[in-house]
Image (cartoon, rainbow over all chains, first blue to last red; front, side, top):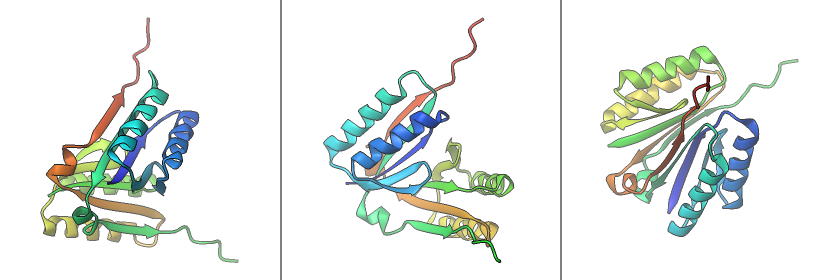
Length: 87
Length: 87
């Protein structure tokens, strides 16, 4: 199933570790603190456990939402990139 | 339908305006830059247009995903709050 993972993590080092965990599971970064991709039910459970273990007793908020194909077809994305300096 | 809105916005003022727009539509803040709640199809379109108009030519990344009840039942959330100072 497709899943989106979003997180609020204050500690830079911990945040990077969580990003690495998402990358390890083949997810793609869609925002600075959001990843998206295909996970089996077991992978979703394993990744979630790994992340909660990484957080331990540190401050953090992690949320994983499965997104079915029907919902995915209705997603809306708007991206404005940083303009390069005019010289 | 239930929707999750996530955004990466560098400009503080713009980010606050987007949060206000989400609040105006009755959404609840679930993370610093993520809101969740019920939107009709029209409300989803209107909110998305309002947000893209707010962003204009500024840097930003906004994504809205509908989340059906079946997906919602499989969401996973882990929250560790900041510990209060021990005195």
